[in-house]
Structures are given as structure tokens and as C-alpha cells.
Image (tube, rainbow, N blue to C red; front, side, top):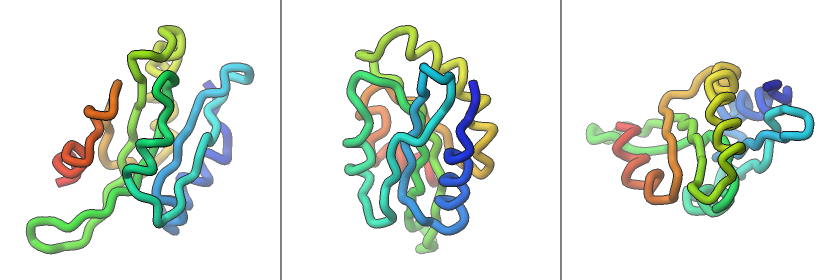
Amino acid sequence: MAVCDECKLKFLELKAKRSFRFIVFKINENVQQVVVDRLGEPGESYDAFTACLPADECRYAVFDFDFVTDENCQKSKIFFISWAPDASRVRSKMLYASSKDRFKRELDGIQVELQATDPSEMSMDIIKSRAL
């Protein structure tokens, strides 16, 4: 599975310049390549991010999560989320699962990984607990 250069460039912008709050990626099965599906502006919320994940198709995503620790320190963690809803095609789930590690290696700087099959598995409470 190839990875489009735009994926790596946009991830670097998210990581270094904080140009985006999140990036959603999809596999273009016609050309067997991971491509950028959607970019989230810095001001967009976590709810806006979860709303753009389709209910019946797999996706990869990275989300830049800002939070305050118990010691009152402002921090940020980059989450890699593998989205594979139950309603998606079996072939699609297999393709995303088999390509995930290779794609993740292209994105240097991911701090937390999460796999989700429905929105409850990536609620804000889960994100917060995994970040701390």
C-alpha cells in the first residue's frame, strides 16, 4: 500500500505548525494508495472530527488533542485513530487492518493509538483517559 506524499506533508504541518486540528485519511482502492480525505481547521472541535467519520466506511485519522494535566500543565498529544465501523465492508476492514502499521510508520510523532468500531469507543472520556 503506497502513501501519498500529501499525507506525510499535512501530518508534518499538524505536528510542527499545528496548522490542523485533525486529518482524516482514506484508502483509494483504485490506485492502492492512502490519501487525505479531510483536514480539520485548528479551531474545530472533537465533535466536528467525530462527525466527519462515515458510519459505513473505514478511515484512518490523526487528532491533535490539547489538555491540562492534574498539575495544571498545558499539554498536547497526537492520537492515531483506526476507524472500522461494523457497517463497513469486510474487505475494506481487512484492507485497513493490513495496511495500518505500514501507514503509521510513515507518520513519525504519533503518541497514542486508538481503534474504534463505533463512536462510544472513542468518546471524549476515553480520549482524556488515554492522554493522561
